[in-house]
Length: 255
Ligand SMILES: O=C[C@H](O)COP(=O)(O)O
Image (spheres, helix red, strand yellow):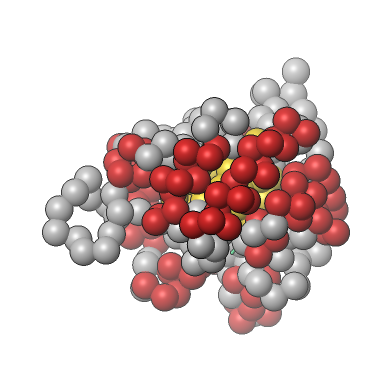
C-alpha cells in the first residue's frame, strides 16, 4: 500500500522546534514540560532543539514522554581541541535523536558550505544521530528563477549518500521566509519538495521515505495549508516553537 506521495509506509509527520539562541533554563524547562504533558494529544512526532547549554535540563524534563531532543549544530570531530564546539557524540550522550546541520544561519554566520554540512551530517550518523539537513534559496536566487537549481545543488552537496528514511531528514527553508512572516505559495513549496524528493532518489535507497520538512514562518494559522502540500512531511519551526500553544497548534493542524 502506498500513499499519494508514494511512501511505501507513510511515516508520521515530524514537527521539530528550533529554539535557536532563545530561552533560559527555567523557561526551557517550563516549555519542555508543557510539550511532554501534551504530546499525547497530537498525531505527529515532536522534537525540540534547545540551545546546547539547556539540552541536559530539557532532556530531564522530557524524560520518556516521547518528545525527541535534538541539537542545533555539531562539530565533525568526536572530541579534541575545538573550543566552544559540541560533538555529535556529546549530543547523543545527552539523549539527542536529531541534530540540525546546515541551517542557513550557520551557513551565513559561520561560512559553512555544502561540504562542511555534509561532513557534519556524516559525523552525526557516526554518533547514531539523525541529521536534519537544511537547504533553501535566498530571495535573490528565487527572484532570478534559480530556486530549484540552488536547492538541488545544496542537496547534492550536503546530503551524504546511502542514508534512508530512518537516518535522514531534509528541511527546505527558503532563507527569505525565515522569521519574516512571509511564506512561499503552496505550489512553490510543492515544486521544491517534489524536486528534492527526485534528487534524493539519486542519493538514497528509499528516498520516498525520507521526511521532508518545510521551514520558514510556519504558524498555527498557516500550518494546515503548508503541511497539506504533497511531499511535505512536517515542519522545522523557529519562532512559533517558543510557545507551547503555538507549537502544539502547528502539530494539531498537521495531517
Ligand atoms: O529553523 C527554523 C527556521 O529557521 C524557521 O524559523 P521561523 O519559524 O522563525 O521562520
